[in-house]
Image 1 (cartoon, rainbow, N blue to C red):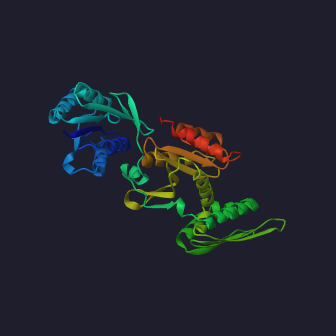
Image 2: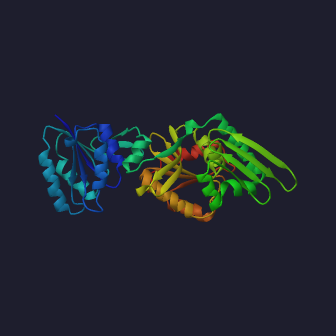
Image 3: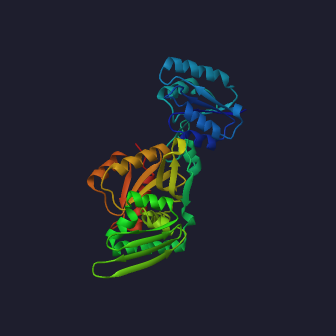
Length: 374
């Protein structure tokens, strides 16, 4: 007797592949729809990742919504399955017409189990009404299931005690002269941003005589002064000193340090870059956390005043994390009303560090992890 598995494939590949990995069948039929708006692309993505011989994984195109045509096609599939085989059917994805046709065709068949898989990695057996938690997939697998890869990222474990000391010094410099720090390190001009990107070393100055000198990747010298004559001179050295200094890298690392103490954080990546087709453009996610249940995408900004950043982040999460992925915006200060409203509309959770404890952050993360997305 063989174990045959039928999976309904819609836009979401994660629940299809997760259940197949867990059940470990001998042969898989992937019910999908053909055409420009069909799910055959997603079915192909899943089929390439299944560790079975090619002939044991079959794409089975079915019309999406015409029940008579669908039921006739499912009947063809039924005639190909030996009555002695054990059959499991994952009706989580695809169309309701497919699920209804499969249930009607196989509900009275012996050795047949129907399954549903929810966003919290729980598999429900509809025959026994029992649930089973399933271990989450690794980040590389999850991302690849949506047809993407991260060619560049930084592992949080690669950061050192020296990087932590640099973080402390950068926060001191920011408090000492916020205006100069913001102008020379956080919101770079177009010219300075291009220089930082293209040159191995350089120096940025302002009209008040403040300066930041940098040598990639590990040396930064800050020279700041106040109107009352006070001076700050800091020589910073660490493996990530330059990336921490510019473009609010220090705040992303600060958030990552806080998140590293969260009990659900099993793996954490920083500055994850997703190239678009042709390699001409890219999207970046500040932090991605693997929780062994679902990935959490985190965007870090000291403050947010417009909805533009929210829209961009929502698109990136949808394209690279899938429907079950949680999206979190972490800021230093509370959001203004407009971006806060936009976050709610986009199913993005928001948390401001100001006047909050790390325990507050962990309780917040625990609460959103088990929430289902819209």
